[in-house]
Length: 321
Image 1 (cartoon, rainbow, N blue to C red):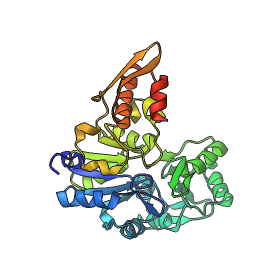
Image 2: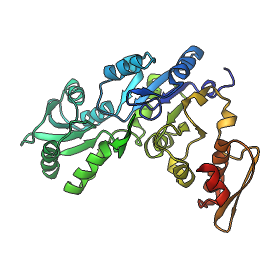
Image 3: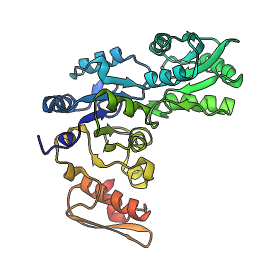
Image 4: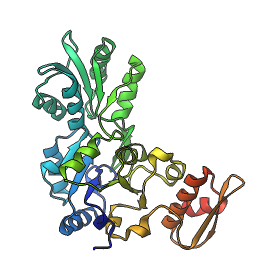
């Protein structure tokens, strides 16, 4: 285990949806991989943009899926959102909550007053994912924001992975309010670095590793925080997105799923790979050689990022289809 990727870092910061589980379905091998990290003595933290559940609810869900955890190991965008509110509001200020009761409870625990309707005393709006968010809730928030209330979005994920596929995420609801108000929210969760920085500090980590499935949140947040990352293909990220990724969304390693944490880091690193030759010729990435398809993707990403050429030749297309 000393030559495993998880051993090269002093903490592992896991995304949840699409990385550890899809709704009620665990990613195969996730419990064993988390257990391997713990047995090696590498602290683990669960860092999620989903603001719909309180940390103790996340712990219960992880435990049900075979990954017992402690509340202090869970860091949610709801917590990050409330940190931003508390920094900017006086104690007892009214905050209009668009989200779950657990989000409202986080607001109350911070010494602020959660409300569900707009009024003259509303100082801020905090918006997090909830399957029960309604047009009426958005309408109340719209009125408050247009009247000048501070607007904090716990996250702006457009979609939410589930066992049934991708569903509308908090970012889709945020987009509706952005259109209705012409205002940009203050974003608390990933890709802002706050969640990862807080999680790393709680683990006493100086060299943590982020594991996530979304380039625009998990990986961008890791880049913003100056943290190495493992991109997994068990959730949202696609080969096309990886090849076309800009500097702010480029991971360090690439794997099919989080079980790669027990593999050698040099086998996972995005870069030139044995068996494959990738060249940018006439605006196309041409491929020769044979080997593992994921190694090909690692090599394609490297050349695309080096040259700016992202169009795939016919062989590359066939191998990645």
